[in-house]
Image (cartoon, rainbow, N blue to C red; front, side, top):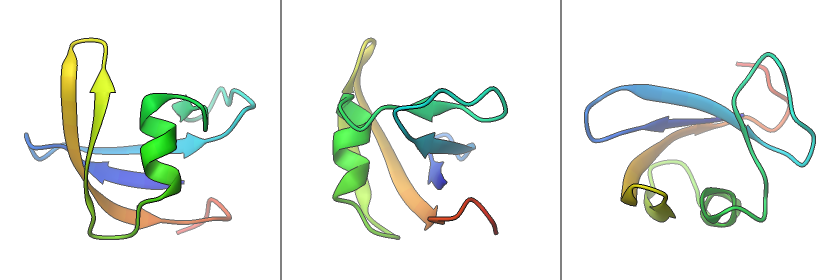
Length: 68
C-alpha cells in the first residue's frame, strides 16, 4: 500500500500489484505511476505521465504488508 498526497491536498491510497483488488485502487508495476512508485521512497515528490497530462504527488507512506 502506498499513500500519495496530490497537490490539491487530497490523499490517495493504492496498491502496486498485477492482481486487481476490489477493495483498493490498484496500479500495475508496468504502468507509468507503478514504475515511478517502485523506485520512490517516503517523502519523495514524484511525477508521471497520466492520460490528462503530467501528474504530481508526494509519497506519504509505503506499507509493504497493507497494514498501517
